[in-house]
Length: 159
Figure 1 (cartoon, rainbow, N blue to C red):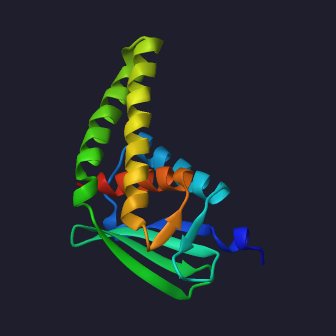
Figure 2 (cartoon, one colour):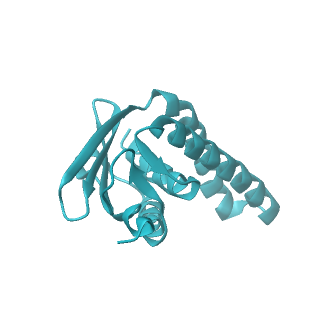
């Protein structure tokens, strides 16, 4: 198997116990993020020569949980990350998303575009922060980090 085939996710799930109710918009965002990740991603566990991988994201004791397995079931590692470094960007992203969803119903195209630019900027900031927090643990590319942040944000909706 080629390295690019090993360094990827073939399954992504969200821990059901970590999920709360969500709106149809939120459910759609979650489904699209998972689909996008599975279509194209770069994901590897540091110092592990296995893969492809299956990932379950969840929350436990106010920490983000990355449960990584080899596709097929064998446990590789579970990483617990504090959400504290992500809290500000999650809060800001939530506010911008609320503005964006309100704007798409009533605002002009230029106003929607301006809000969306801010939303993308925060999303990029969160992706970089996630990559930094996973450094030495999990190796991901920028696009995968962006999509994973969407799922982390989905977990945040539980409150």
